[in-house]
Image 1 (cartoon, helix red, strand yellow):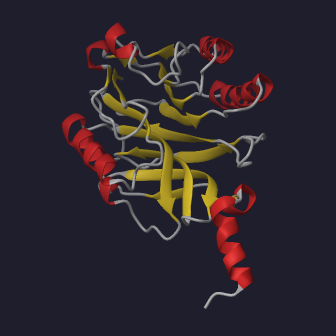
Image 2 (cartoon, helix red, strand yellow):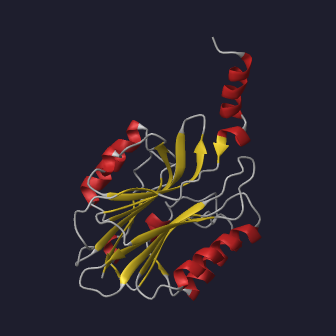
Length: 275
């Protein structure tokens, strides 16, 4: 039988944020599969999706596998991804390299939480960028993941940042994270994809994001109006999810929001770029 201390420890890990949500020493967790040496010379298909920690849910797995089969993305950016502490591999991504950047460990469920970037090639390099500030109550930071990839027949590499911006904090803390990401992007001379859940639920937040994008000469993927309205937002707020790009040509007819997907409260965003 469990003694009283063990019962208390179990209850604390389940219900008390400071005991349940632990900071992790892991920078990135990586699985590399060498399938090809550079991204396709014709186009780059991108999937961006906040999956609301549903990746162990059978409905999400079904939706995700359908998206992979139907759209065959070359780059995948997932936010709010869970990874078992003991996980050796991800069945759904068995044919892709992936890099996972955790921002905390859930001690109750024994899972990491964070963001995952997957690709048909391994990155030249990657780096997790952890926020200096923490979200209230659960006292955890937010994380972004930079990954750089070689391009077909090009000297320049493609720099990607998969981001989840900080929530439930004042505008100064939001701006601090955005400035750090802007600094990381500003040193890259070649093409860029800046994608994620930016938590731009206020006009002030959206304004700061667009100002940073403008300084970096980034363009947002243009979704048709009826699809743009399906991107996650709160009431009449600006959308939360974006795909920005530079140094690539957008295949505008391919941009779509998969509004029929309901396994997360965010809809998957798809885009295609010509190099």
